Image (cartoon, rainbow, N blue to C red; front, side, top):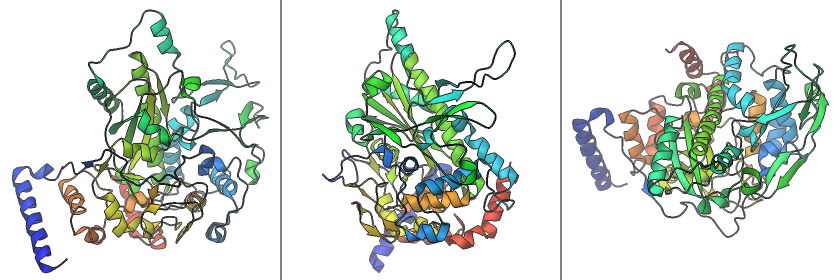
Length: 514
């Protein structure tokens, strides 16, 4: 930037700042910066051919025994394949193996308990939707009403919060009930968005199914299970042999794949997809990668499950069918982009205008025809190409420093090679899912460091809106430096972060803040 350009930008920025502060200082920069697009804002090539659910990293645990080709994972964490890393995660999660930092600040029993509590609704009432289980059922052992004893002989299965059971709608319509009639698609969207936010969502967008279906998994996958007798004598179905888990070994039984069929599994053909985003706790994520940050993610997933169920109930009560989903059924990030909730970011997640990357995403497929939203851009791609703070801070070195580009299987980056767990044929930044999840297992909980350090991760205050405005100016390369000058996100170097006063203060502040 030459001197004339600098003075011009500085003058305009100063004038805009003064005018905004003079009129309404508290919300001076609460601006809608998004530019709408008729098409998906990232390149999709003819090589794009969808994505199979069995290749999601969490599902490879059940069938992929191929050893990692990435020496970084083997040398740093000691894991040889996906199943071995996720087995270590499960051992720590279920208390069979101590956490790496057990007893340290952020990894104490009380921090671990908060993590388990945050995940509890998702874990106890949604049966693995966060890991990709669609239309899942919960295993339960009935209680004998006469004796109060648990009947352990055989489990029964009941619908989870993300159930696709639409029989109530069929019953309503079969017995003289009617669908609620909206004036038009616009009014229908207005009511659905209001209801969704009232029931727990923070952001809501609509995608027509015709536009959304390319992001539905080419094949849905379900882990194969076997019946086992558990240590307490009860019988349960499991995709892993539970007897081998405490030993650190694993025995799995593959997956079954089917072509997507909403009519067969949910009783309708979708017309619209309601995409929902949920803010995660700002103070919790300041503590990343501690158990408290993991609890914040878990609470987000629990809130997703609860809110999905409420919105699906609302739709069914007005005569429309619904298929609520978490991480299952379709790719969440591109659907959120299609719905206008935000832009793709270097870390592989979505960045929203209001919450930055600090959101979780769910979606509900429905036969109600709704007025669609459009994708938006507000400078994230351009900013991510010059910032790279998340890549520098990533403890597993999973996030590339290279520019966004159309990915093809086999391409090599500074953080590894594009493999079967990456959706190819679409423009994006490469993130090595195998490295990311290896650190999760090593850490004994989610990470979230990339969320925490991102300059877009700010609470809703006017000067933070000003910083977002700066990402659209020639000053954007300075924003990361300004972020660090003011102390946001803490130390970037992973080893320094773990031992830093910033992280210790963030953990103590979380527990002490009222």
